[in-house]
Image (tube, rainbow, N blue to C red; front, side, top):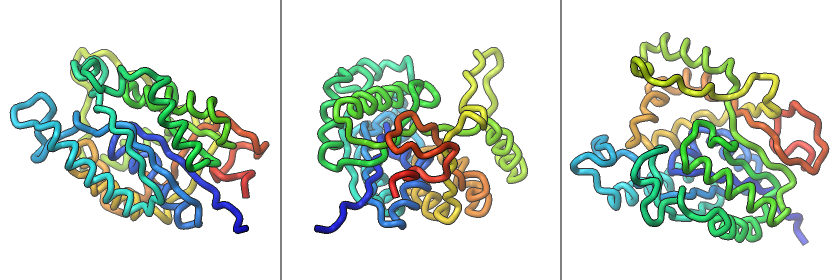
Length: 276
């Protein structure tokens, strides 16, 4: 009997999240013969519409946005050579505090146990060795990212299948580098509004990051995947960098290992350390 392929499962909130924080590892591990499974929890209906029309603005058609973003997601998966795409189809909840948080079908208001049951069924089906999702704050406080974290950790605990679980993160040292590269490229980055509450500090100190995966060889695929989601204006900043600067800035993907049965030492440079 042929030995079963190693499997990576990435659980993300919206179409385009897969490209931003895990596009490199999805492409790299697919190239190495590892099966990759992307689970996208929401339909992205609170994203920008054609022409950049914002949700709630005149002309924003959530149903049309869903169709557009599903097509973009499928194109992104093709660019990253994702083996299996699974969509849970919950309604995008929008940013924290938006009225859409509480609308029927919103991911944010779906009982964790209900959504975790569906994800656990996918874990049972694909039996991933490694699962990647967000931390308990969803990296930056988006309700759908927080909910993706909750259902993933519940499903992992319920099944006991994954050997390793990771949360995406960014080293704080990278934010200064990001600002430098953007400035050199002549790209304006939006400043916080005057009088606005300061945002919580994102990412982690470098010495708290357990896993640094070099994905520079796959940055072109990551760039192409992100480009399929160009309807979402927040992605334009990254695409304006061009491929070379994008690789410089986005060619290392970093994680915190939160569950491990292999005993592989950290820091590590491979999500599958201890498994091959």
